[in-house]
Length: 315
Image (cartoon, rainbow, N blue to C red; front, side):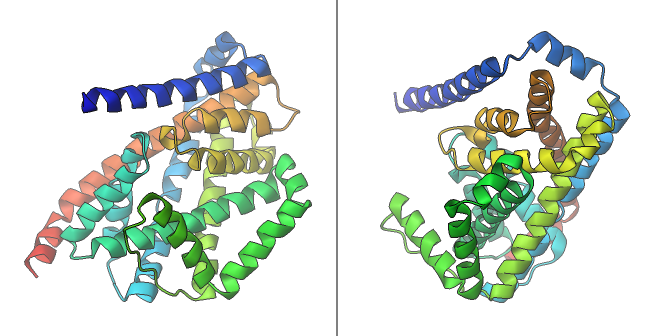
């Protein structure tokens, strides 16, 4: 009975996501036949190049995570181990609920003799910097975001960023109390990172997500030509604001439907409804394919480095 209840909840979440996306695209006046024809007429070598650029961006977060582990916890691990630990659980984000990625990460961390709580809290800090970077890019690059940035909300956001850099313990305090809402009995310990480490981590994500935005623009150019490259700023800004909204949508897996709908709305008004629909839906498709291709690479790397897991367990 409990299993059926869980399946029902998952089905409801997917239904909500699909319904939201459906009404957003319907409001835009999307022609699904035109969307299908657009993908069918694409120049696939250019599309593959765009997905390759997105895939290369996946190499960046492990650099920042290694530095957090070293400075905050005194844990040093080789780059490829950090890459395996961060990316091997990544497909779990498509399972409803935000716990699966962390659960798999904690399991793998033990194989490297890394404390599961260390892995958990360090990645939480990493994800917090990801969200900050997403908002920064979205507010700076998206036309709608620039309006928000110049408002009182933008001033509040900038003030928080300055506070996090001057006193990173404030970020720890916010994360700690947020986690306690869900598990009040659990005790979390966060390290004190320097302001420069926060800046470095956010900068890594700014670079990585800008690369993702450029990859999306290149993939879009495979359908609509080089004019999409000239709209790189607007596409990246719309994607990053939509990414943020999808990330904080806890009730749907990986922000499915929310991210695509939000991106379609946030793309510049100079685009047609079909172009907005193709690029927003395509962004999900292109990133997912890039993730699957990179996942295959990580699995191969994991098998090649498996002896390192065994050696770690024997220590």
